[in-house]
Image 1 (cartoon, helix red, strand yellow):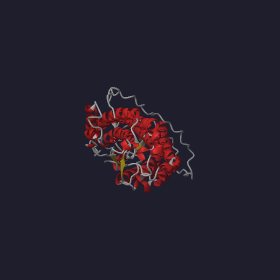
Image 2: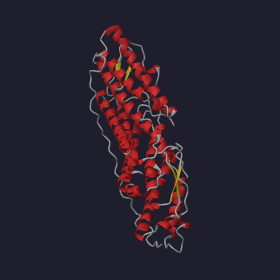
Image 3: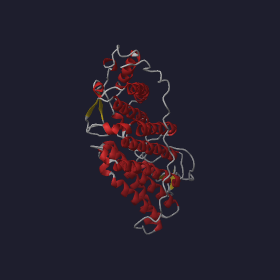
Image 4: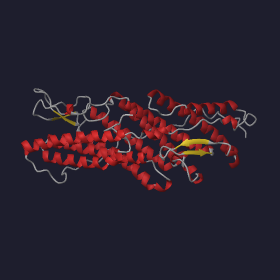
Length: 418
């Protein structure tokens, strides 16, 4: 996978949630069910879901998400009928579902005998699969040019291009404004794919929300001591917020591509920060729910907070430079660099994260050096110890897409008797 850089550092490990096939008809035999075809169909749907391992192929990601969409309602119909018929605890032991837990992060395998816990895991799988569609879609996008090409020196005049980066136009060219172009800051070029990517993430957030509010809370009291983190409502809520942060990150990346003004870009970047900070608070407020929490998930959240705050400072620095407050531009750049330095250790959790932060650091240092050189040669302004410019309040413009009740499942298992 390619790092998302200034859009988002992808926690695609959430999509590594896997399970093993389970043959329901072996435990619900034909003499107990007049709807054996429904039971067999459930086994088939689960087998199809298990066939995909989330390896980053866009076609497989969509197929896996579709398989989850098929399996969950079918399983939910069965769980509803079993609940009505009062299946005993002894009978439940006939079920045995095997899952891993990427959100725990230690590679442990968990065996679940409660079919309601299987439903909880299936809902989390459904949300993770939908989110993974966005992850692989971003990985498919081309990358913006990085390196010296961002800072041409054909002319002494430096202007802001694309609302995000410094560039030098060729002689005779004026300042470009409002024109859509490939961003020259690090990261993917989302182009017209951005709305679909953001929508997939918002749908995933809605699925996580449904799990957090309607599926997982009723399981908490009966969970074993060793359990996958995916069965905790607080983890589902954390992932809801992560998905929304990523959806907003995709939105601000597209805004940058459309040459949106720096002031608005800064607000949107800080909105991403606010969402990641809310995810961090969700984990910290419910830390007693978990035996362990994935280091990669924690690193992802810290990276999101630090990187997007640094981007907001970079936007402010560019505006300060354009208004000839060059000393302030240097100071704002330094503030952004400090925020990137905070996440260097976290970025070490994955080579691609480390590369993304290094790329972003290089870009910010490069623009900072441009400001410093201009200040030394032309402006001779004092560089403040702290920025005088205040960053704007963050603006969150994304919401989850609420899950709508699945249709055409009420007729399933209508003749089931146990």
